[in-house]
Image (cartoon, rainbow, N blue to C red):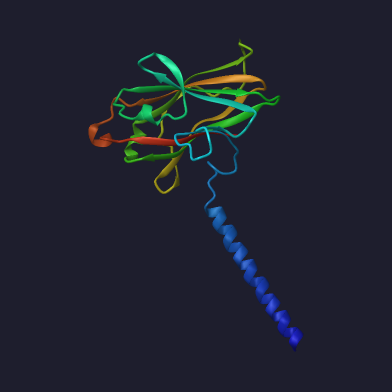
Length: 217
């Protein structure tokens, strides 16, 4: 009788832990975000230091990365670690130009997506009027131009195709499948454009902050 009782208790415990595992697995699947998770963050430009050293973090040592913002006063691109200050106070028909300068120092090809993460705004209407674009993409190796297949197309698109990662926090894929051959530098000439048709009623006092620009591999 004792053995039968112990066997029954064992069965109940097995059923309990199996049910618990099923619930935890289901919850993990529901909260899974394919835009952010499941990919390796190659580089992170962030406005804040967070106590981990330089605000520009390159977590893949095979990549060298720079964020360059165009200075309207000097008419030159300057190395920066954030882009938000350039997006403050923009008005309809303004353009903010910046470059992503990436160098693959490894002996193997890298293919990556570039995305904005941790986007916050006080007015989501802004997403319909703010365009993200790619003016040009240039590859060089030892100063010589390199021809690369499957280069992303040039574009200018409103960033309304945006993903809400968490409540009030968004992410946006700027460009997918950027190939960077071994020992090659690629410069993406990018921009934001604030639609000249934007109305005061729709975008008054609107702002957008980008916490991170992530190269995911």
